[in-house]
Image 1 (cartoon, helix red, strand yellow):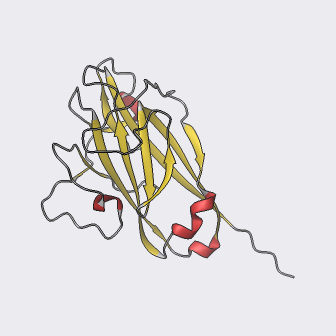
Image 2 (cartoon, helix red, strand yellow):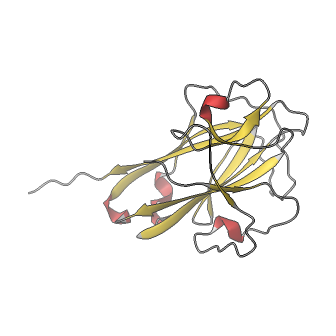
Length: 178
C-alpha cells in the first residue's frame, strides 16, 4: 500500500528536523504529493520523458535537490523480521528512518546541505531499483507513526533528469506453535 508523500525543494537551509517523525511544518514548506502515476511515489523530472511513468510528482526542470517525507504506520515492530528499501534514483540520495541515516548511495555528499549536489551521475533502471537491506535498523521502528525521509541530489542544474522513487517493504516474522 502506498503512503502519502510530502516534498520540499529547498531554497535555503531547513535544518535536519524534517527527517524526524515528530516534525511539524508550521510554515507549510512541505507539499503533499499530487497528480502523476498513483502507483508510484516518484518525485522528480525528466526532459526526455523516460522516468515519467515512475513519477507522481513532477518538479521543475533544473531542480538540484529535494527533500521527501514518507509517513507510514507499524502496528507491532517486534512482529517484523526484515526491512528493505528499493530505491530508484538519479543521481544520488540519503535515506533516514525516524531521523537515523539508514541508506546512502555512492555520490551522496558527506554532509548534506540544502544546496548539496551529487558527486556522480547515476541513472536508474526503469524496471527495478537498487536494494538496500535495512534489517539492522528494525529497532528504529516505533509502534504507530514512522517516517522515511529522503534527500535526493542531482549533479547539476543542467541535468535532464532527477528521480527519487522509494519502496519500503517489511517481512513479517513467522510464528510456529510448539
